[in-house]
Image 1 (tube, rainbow, N blue to C red):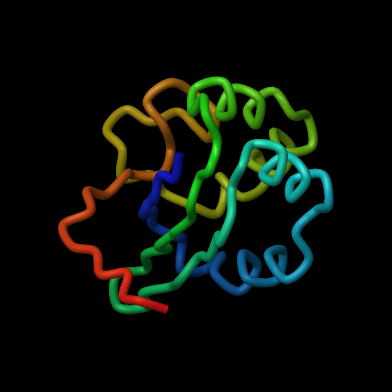
Image 2 (cartoon, rainbow, N blue to C red):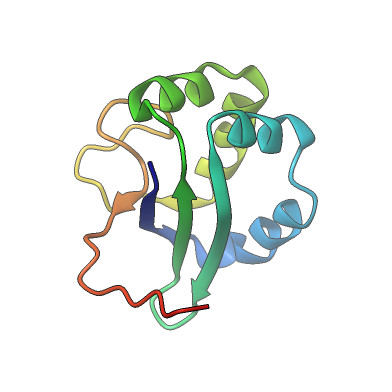
Length: 118
């Protein structure tokens, strides 16, 4: 199964450079947790006009909930989220943080896709 995901969140403008710096060297355990949970083709883009981070990735697993729970249980990922959440402002009403019920990043609905014939 392949699921495409696009999410957004606000980055605090005064923390943007720090956010970029930590993403220059993402902790190996965080990347391992994503790999184990079947994340592929993951990227984060920045919209400076609105201070938005836009994440895109593909998930290629069989059990979304189990994979997301596995990521949320990973201790290194939880430490990473604690650090990066402090640099962000969620657009999800009532959000408490990454890995918490209801989410932290706002999921966007896909309205168009063209895959071409590569």
